Amino acid sequence: MMTQGPELETLEAFLESMARLASAVHIVTVRHGGRDYGMTVTAVTSLSTDPVSILLSINRQAAAHDAILATGELGVSTLRPGQSGLARTFAGMTGVCGEARFAEGDWDTGSDGPPVLRDAASMMRCRVLQSHVIGTHRIFACKVEQVVLGHQPHALVYGNRQFGTMAYAED
Ligand SMILES: Cc1cc2nc3c(=O)[nH]c(=O)nc-3n(C[C@H](O)[C@H](O)[C@H](O)COP(=O)(O)O)c2cc1C
Image (tube, rainbow, N blue to C red; front, side):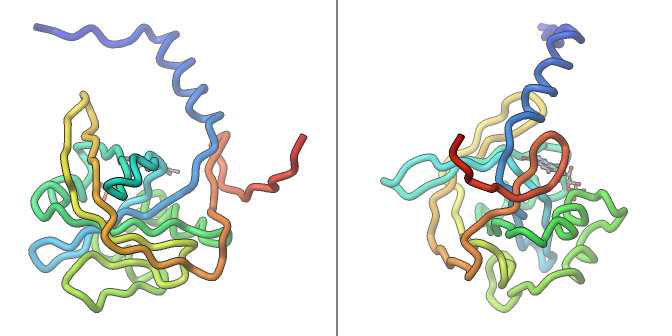
C-alpha cells in the first residue's frame, strides 16, 4: 500500500516547528569492521533510569546507520560550546566524509569500542536494546553502559538553524 506523504504546508510547518525546538548537539560514533563512523545528531533523549537508557533517531541513509545495527554498540559525545566546528564536520557540512572526520577533535580511539570525544560535555558508551524503523529513520533504544562527565557542564545547542549556548535566564 502506498503511504501518502504529508501536505507540503504541513511539512513546512513541521520543519519550522522542529527548528524552533532547541536541542543539545551530540556526535554519535560507532566502530565496525575496523572503521570508525561518526555523525552529528540532535535527536537524542533520555528514556529511562531502569535500565539507564536513551533513545536516538538515525536516518537510515546515514553511513553510521548500518554499522550501529551490525555492532549494537555506539558512543554519544555531547558537545560543549566552542565545538560547533566539529558539529559541522560530522554533519557533512564541510564536505569531509568517513574516517577523515576524526582528524578534527581530541578523540579517544584506544579501546575496541566506539571512539568518544575527550573534551566533550559528556561521553557515553551505549548498547542497543531495541530498534524500530519509522519511515526514513530508525529509532534506537540504548542501554547506557558508561558515562564520563567532561569539565564543561553546558552543552552546545542547535535552535532556529544556528549553533549557540543556553543563557538559562529565567523569564
Ligand atoms: C544540528 C544537526 C542535527 C542533526 N541531527 C540528526 C539526527 O538527529 N539524526 C540524523 O539521522 N541526522 C541528523 N543530522 C544529519 C546528519 O548529521 C548528516 O546527515 C550526516 O552527514 C550523516 O552522516 P554521513 O554523511 O556519514 O552519512 C543532523 C545534522 C545537523 C547539522
